[in-house]
Amino acid sequence: LAISLPGLPMAAVLGLIAIGKAGVIINLVLMVLNLLPLPPLDGSRIVSGVLPPGPERAYARIEPYGIVILLVLMVSGVLGKLLIPPVLAIMRAIAQILGIA
Image 1 (tube, rainbow, N blue to C red):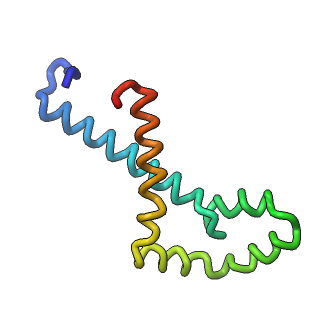
Image 2: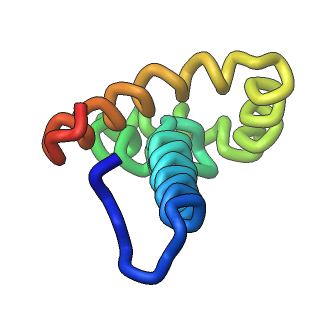
């Protein structure tokens, strides 16, 4: 590791790096989660904006069940399988942009 901060032991530097990485991962997961097209989430607003009026109204009718759908996806493990690939792809892209890939 080529990072050093004067006055800090290497363990503290490694700890700060781990905390920063965890913060980035948490924010990426929340971003991808929020973009899912489930009505309580912002991704549903994007889908509603591109649908014609008839299908948009039909899509809006599932909004009362969105939280239940989200919880079922979470408990069944499907949510993790949906989130992991885009999060990893974004992490790889960030690492490549920063030159740490």
